[in-house]
Image (cartoon, rainbow, N blue to C red; front, side):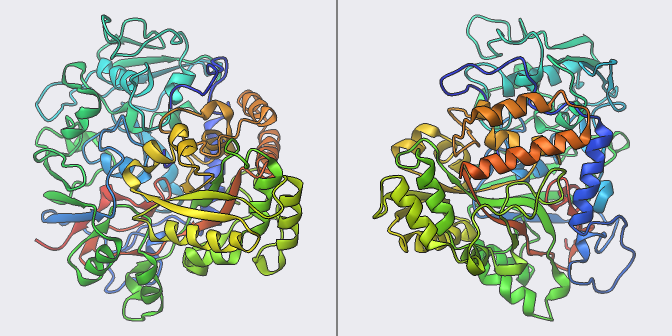
Length: 602
């Protein structure tokens, strides 16, 4: 996840589901493998005077039930949106749980247990019919919004409608429901003129106030994983204001907005007295107040964390390069540092449409010329990530860590092979293009600079263009028109799975049907017929080994097409002040679990 609705130049293939049809147990196995490879393990921490380096990867550091105080967050950019129906950043999904409850949620625990599903708004886990084309969810009774009104099934249905359907559907976030739900092809969405908001939306039934029945267009046994999305957080139709709803979201969780969200400035939360802790299995709600400062320079965030003036870096991507080396080597600080291996791929999209990169040989020249050692150093060396030569994280079934289609001595690049490919694509002296990066992400900018220097060795001249994080995935890199108009042949990016399967990781970034006019995450715009066909076929396959084989072929094919330049499988350097309680790395969100956190300060 890091980021929808219409495709470019053709309608969606509505006959297929966007996720493979496998049993949830198989997904659990994949998740367990992922965590095993990442060094994850179960367990919670007991009382301890001083934690160990990286202890938060597998245990709860500084466990405490102490309530009160203010938990202080900051981030170098902004939310893509604090509206649960309009977000795809992992940290936005994590943070939105303070005020937005979803049908299902992850278990709040470190290690393998943290990627298991449990009910949130739901009374129990969903039940399916025999062929997994119909799923029934019962809501808990007596749940209330911050204004005291009852949460009902139609509010969840409306929330899904506003985020997934119609030409004015909210742009950020995946559109799994649009692709999966049956009998919804003609539904114009709740914002269509002269239309009842839910008229014609028949893919979800609400036979009573506490029941939702999801009708799918194909068998899909992984459907429960879709129900953890913030898009299932309820929204009453009468309070919705489209994209302006983000200003003050109606809370269903333990906290509510204190005043309006101020884009680029702040978002403050206070307790929601209507929240019933007995109905909520995962939110500790320890602080009295939560404050977020937006648009703070990363170096300032890092310094304030170390100085005890800040509790959490909201972005969850770890400290910047300037602080990273200091913390890792400083014995006085190492015990406050975690360095977990995440399931996030940091990479560069190579656009397959912009000239001359529409010629595969020119794209191959990019991958042969890249200096992988320099790319890893841009992410902090060994503590920043493991060099990647394939797309899927190695723990996912079907991933092949030995795959390396663009080898070079010491990872510095094969310049002779790059020049050979430039000759083949008709640009023996090189060509020019631009590299897009997020201005407030030092490692993104460092990646762009490392690539710029490497490509210049073979005559490929690049201009680095920097954009703010909060709009990058939607307005700049996420807009094909913007990409084309600004010659963004290369864009620095990052991706984590919506859940741990080959489909959950690759479909949105490699399937041609995932290309969209806004919020596009298939930024390379790869639309390969063979890859598309494999994604269509894999959803109906029940044999795990056969699915894994297809995922491996998709990965290899995308690398053959040189649509993605992998950089590293990320390791983050996370700093936890001693005043922060109940701290642990959560595999489901690839950062600390924000719902568990408390503070010993006032």
